[in-house]
Each structure stands twice: as structure tokens, then as C-alpha cells.
Image (cartoon, rainbow over all chains, first blue to last red; front, side, top):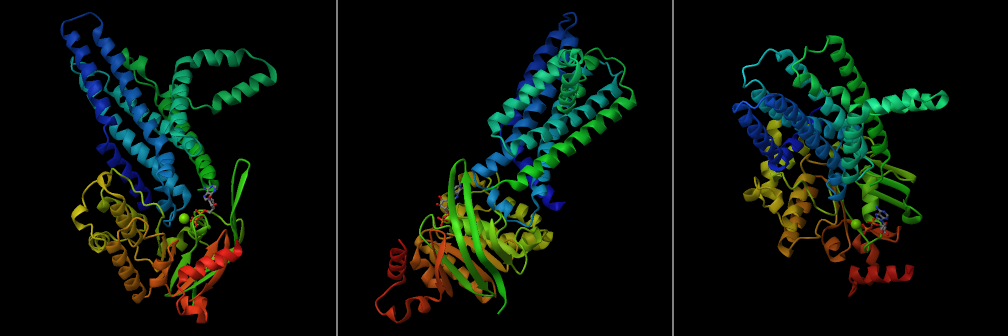
Length: 256
Length: 246
Ligand SMILES: Nc1ncnc2c1ncn2[C@@H]1O[C@H](COP(=O)(O)OP(=O)(O)O)[C@@H](O)[C@H]1O
Ligand SMILES: [Mg+2]
């Protein structure tokens, strides 16, 4: 356990000492600042844009941090040869994978919390705090989302370069996130064996869109029922467990 | 004496696409408790490959291999092993202190002991003034020193050094030889590789000569040179024996 945290702790230091996080943070503050300044001048409907845009930015930026950190860990360790002293330590390979996963989680949760706190302070600036429990769900879903993205990128990173990994993760994020309903339609309109195959494939893909509360938060709808939150959590844990076990299996066979 | 390290008929082949490189073609090795074993051979002989097998980083495709009587693939076998890799490269956004602490935590070393040991080791390698500087700014030689320090963080019984003198200046080499001999006095076993015979000759109790994946000879410096000793350096012996094989 201590070994896993030792590996993860190194990644937090990396986050603090590299500029990726600060660039995104400043970018977000500027955009939200500009949008809110316009709300101040009472342009109709603008606060909804602040919510819509702000939430999307929080998710996108946290996604970027989580994917880039998770995707680079193992390839960079191999390329720079820091992996050798690590492999020689009394560590099982799965602990290296878990350490990298916990590190990616820690790094993305820290970033997400900062981004989300800024978002909430803009969101509630107008005095609307009626949907606190919805915002709470947004936070939980954000963390579950980062669990998925970190595990997904760690899994790809045991056999893919960082560039390929980030590209593929982005494609999944955009295609599955953006066109989920059309994909579903195609699958369910197909027939016979093909439809079964499509169905299996569809459920095997990582469903990043499950975690997207953008519309709900933008319109300040009612919070989700508890069973939805529980199901999505269970889905996340099962999916991440499968991804990480697969990553471990590949990593253990890897030749260095 | 007890065998710390024993390898029989060790074989390893790298395969990448269609090309195959037989890096080790059946190597027998044994290192006894408390000795300094010098593992010499020209570039590409297979030294680093053998070391990766010893550390469980790679799995031998044939042969038997044990450290302390156990398989090096088992993590706990490596609890008392220190390793300095051939190319010293560590996380550039960390300081030496942070690096040593991370490794110390992986070994499960108690906090107070770890703090004390980190200080002592950085002093030993002469990095006490750079202890809290990011390694981004370190030269090759400084990285090498960090590398040596991290190999000692768990107070290992067996120290495996892959070309440890590589990037060091003559003074640092001398210093490292002294440290290696000190460690021997403390009862540690040291296995180190080099392509420079003069280095090995000075500190080793026994040496093994590796060439193209074959172990050509093992023994003490005296054994290997025999009565030809007068006027013949290990360097010449080495060139002769390799010459015969080629
Ligand atoms: N990762 C690898 N893939 C393919 N061939 C390799 C790899 N590493 C080493 N080799 C080859 O194996 C042989 C032995 O290499 P190595 O063990 O590094 O030798 P040494 O450390 O004695 O210089 C060399 O021919 C080298 O080119
Ligand atoms: Mg080598």
C-alpha cells in the first residue's frame, strides 16, 4: 500500500511542478471571468451559457489532465529508462499499474476539485444555490468519470505511445460522448447475429457520456434518483477493474 | 560459503519483428557471500541482459536462476538487492531527497530510519549541497551519483552495478572504488559489470569474462593470468582470449 502511494505521490509533485495545470486554470478563469462580466451587464440568458460552458470546460480540462498524465507515465518511464530501477524494486508489476492509476486519479481529482470549485463559485455568484445536491452529484460523477478516463488511458499506455493513446482517448470521448444516441440507433436497427455483435461491442466501449450532467446542470433540473448514481458507480468500478486487470496482464508479459 | 547468486545454463534471446538476437547462450554463474565479482565483456556481450535477468526484469527463456536461493521474479527476493542501472536517469521534476524517499517507501523502510539514511547516502556520494535541487539541472555525473545512492537505500546484501564507473571522473571513480571496498568489509556482496578491465582488476575478488553471450572464463585475477602474470595485464589476457573466440 505504501509502495502504491509512493508512486502516486511522485506524480502529484509532477503536477505541481509542470505548467499544464496552471495553463488550463488561467484559461478557465479568463473565460469564466469574461462570460460572467457579460452577465453583469444583463444580457439575457448569458448565465445559462456560463453554466453550460463552464461545466463543459471543467470536464474537458480535467479530462485533458487525466488522459495526458495517465497516458505518459509508462511510455515515458520506458523511454527515459526510469522504469528499470523501478522494476528492480521488490514490487509486483500490478502495484506499478495501481500506483500509476492512483497517481493519475490523485492528479486529476486535485485538478478537477479546483476547476469545479471555481465553476461553482461562478455558478452560485448570482445567488442561486437551490441545486446544491445536483452540484454534489456533478462532483461525484466527475470523479467517477476521471476514474474511467484514467483507467482507460493506463490500459492503453501499456502497449501504446502517448500520442496514439491521447488521440484515441479523445476520439472515444468525442464520438461516444457526442454521437451516443445515433450509434445506439444504428445498433438497435440492425438484425440477427450482427445486432448481437454490435450490442456486445457497444457495451464493451467506455461510456464516458454516462457521467455528463451538462444539460441537467445548465437547466438546474432536479437531481438524479439515487439508483442512477449507484448504478453508474457500480458500472465505473467494474469497468475500471477490468481495464486495470487487463493492463496488468499485458504489462507482466512485457519485455524490457 | 553460501551462494548468493547462482545461474545455470542461462539463455535469453531478444525478438523484435523478424530479427533475433541471442544475447545469452547458456551462461553459468555463481557468486558467493561477501565477494566482489567483476563481470567483464566488450559492448554487446550480454552483461546488461544478464543483469536484467538477475533482477527479474526479464525472464530467462531457459536455465535456472536464483538469488538467495529464490527466484528473482518474486518481489520479496529483491528486498535485499540494490541495483544501479547502466544509464542513470531519474525523474527530473524531483529532488534527490524526494527520489530516495519514494524508493525507500517502496522498500517499506521506517520513516525515521529513512530520513537518516537519505542524508547519509547523499553525503556519501557528495550531493549534500544539491539534495533539494530538482534533478532537471543535474549533469550526467551527478545523476550517476544519485543512481549509486538509490542503489544503497535499502542497505542491500547484494549490490548489482551495471557499468557503475561509466560517466565518472577519475576522482569519483576512486571514491566509488573505496565505497565498494568498504561495503565488502561490511559483508556485502557486490556484482558489477564493466567493459574496462583496469577498473575490475583493481577491486574484484573474482571475475567472469563474457563475450557474445558466452562466459569464456571465471576465476580470480591470479587464476586467469596464471604464471604468465609477469608483464601481462588482464587487458592483454582479455584481448587474447576474445581473439581466440573470434
Ligand atoms: N531490447 C533489445 N532488443 C533487441 N536486442 C537487444 C536489446 N537489448 C540488447 N540487445 C542486444 O543484445 C546483445 C547484448 O546486449 P547487452 O546485454 O546490452 O550487452 P552489454 O551490456 O554487454 O553491452 C547486443 O547484441 C544487443 O544489441
Ligand atoms: Mg550494458
